[in-house]
Length: 292
Image 1 (cartoon, one colour):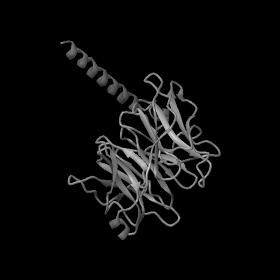
Image 2: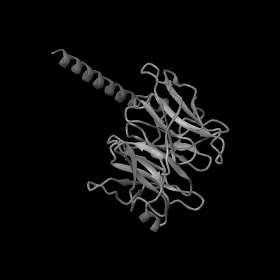
Image 3: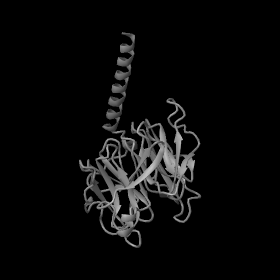
Image 4: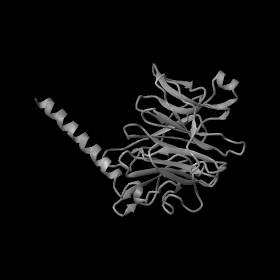
């Protein structure tokens, strides 16, 4: 009876927590209390996360409860020496000032339990992480530690609910035959060792395939596609079929792919309503309303 009571209390607590998170995402305070756009993407939180003299470096992420926003800034495309991973935390009056939580780190993404923050440091073959330092200190993180630096790529690392992770990585032999220089791939752990498998065609096209967002349930992937020699690219979406294959990517439409621009860092908020991405060479973070 006591065990049943404890389990019931734990279940009730989880339900209460999920309801609180849902209520926050549906409140005026969501997205750092910024006014949501309609159909046309626009810069996010100007003056708060778009600071003078710095530009956004690709992917951002929210904590699951929506009260913390993480992003990377840098002052150069040539070097990550001055890059900073920053966090803005929602306060009653809106957003707090951004604070740096790691130096030279890029592309933040949360683990499924929100307790680990993954990132990379320059390059495309390394993966780092930080752990939260207690449930009562949500803005306190451990020092960055490296998970591994292997010969295969782990660019844009994103974990999923199944335990799989998706990355941009070195092409397979079949990819190379199709002039693929980097490939969207799935990273699995087999007997404690990482194993990389390219997703193949049609999701991988000739050239570089690295910038991605994968839904937590692996139902869809948003990729940067149609990259030109001067790095302009568009955002396209591919869906996971029942047989494990992926559909041919389709464009997210003219409101996002509105002419030549470098589009990357795609990310969908935990409530599934907004797409964030960076655009152009002096990156400005945009977001778009609507479930995909």
